[in-house]
Length: 363
Image 1 (cartoon, helix red, strand yellow):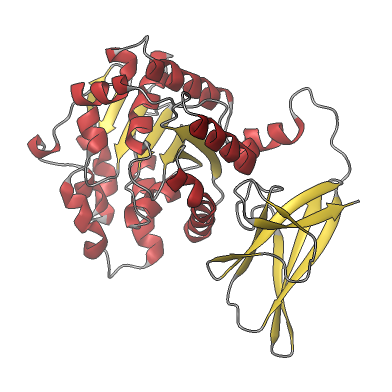
Image 2 (cartoon, rainbow, N blue to C red):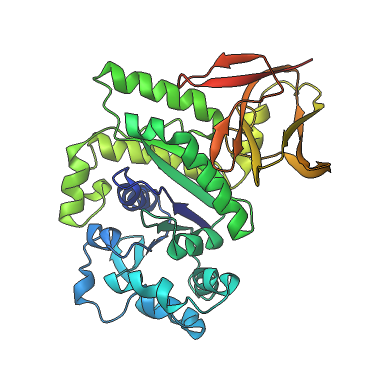
């Protein structure tokens, strides 16, 4: 059973659309799918034809008490062939306050425990997360092995793209386990040069973390949500159905963690060059948290980096150890929530978004 969270703290980027229609595409290929609606707005429930106001129970009853984990099977509804739903309701918004007295570990493991209690083993569990970094999001990530980040191909998405990566990295630290993260470009209008350029910038920035598939703007997706069914059922020949079918094929073909190794070498690629151990240091007497991100790790701060902190008098030294094949790389530091170039490295270059990046040559 593969559990995938669909996450982005920005609203309107296609999280619920991706959850519901990816579920539809996977089910159309014969998979059994459970959609877990963790958003108090319950849009995924509505998009699957379920009115949350007409339900007596939802995920709140499962998550509010430790003993509620075993009740997940009781609230699950069958919506469409191959697609079951664990519905949400507005009462979920009160969960964080209700569990405020519990320790962080206990509060964030509720959904994971509930999924483990299921007698039915689904092929896929897709979790629709709220547009916020909240207890509900932490529960989703704790229960997941994979994350899909729908990323709108617009100026707002591009402006916040690296902050989004940092947020995901921080969430990975908080939930205490590695997550396989991939980015899905959405709301793409290929008729405009701006959208094409933006998509190119996103692909350049995310590289192998980015899906090959792109979700095009398609009014049929909105119409399907209004009808309460996936587009694979309401308009199977529409662009939206074709796009999510392509995403489903990518998801099904790539097991958790596989894509990282495949993109590094490829199934038929030549052997990788021998890597070099590169050590770089950041010195600061006032900084509290320093991470490094670059095109060598998909711009996810400290992903795949060994890190330690040393002291030189009052100055703290963050030592970053990278294993890289020979080549030229761009990078920046993320210092207490702010992106900075390397003050000890005078070599720099403009990045794909126009910002200045430090340049590292590995020989």
